[in-house]
Length: 212
Image: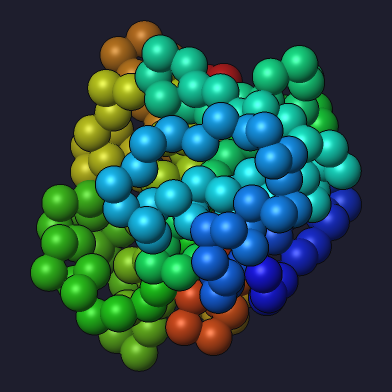
């Protein structure tokens, strides 16, 4: 399983990205042979599932059972560490934070996002898009909102009206902030992005979280 990106951040988080090139049988070899695999009909989905668990094992140093709460948010059984996962095509990304809830998003950069941008952009975000980097900025905005949504972890969030990404200028890597508003509270998170070739990786942890 080729590791194409791995980084330990200055805070308590670390993240990595794998490109899946192996068969399901090869991926299983690195895990406990007795692990119970869900009955996937799609072979690619099975490989994603196995690759994600290999990735978490790499980041944590242990083979944890990945469970999901009632909102579909993943967590590690018998561990206080926080995780987040993202899949796109043959790639899998994971972030692990020993102290704080976290979110990660990985996307392949293609023009198709322009056709659906109106579904997640707010007016302020439309106003600061740079013409020379519109495509990449759309992926940063989408990924930032995905991270905030994953950290919040309770569902019921409309991306275009309840999550707003603060203005930023695009470069291959950078930082911005994102604001998530519910009816009763608002939360602000710092978000970091990094372009890896034709991939956009966005991550956030709630160490920088401010409840407004």
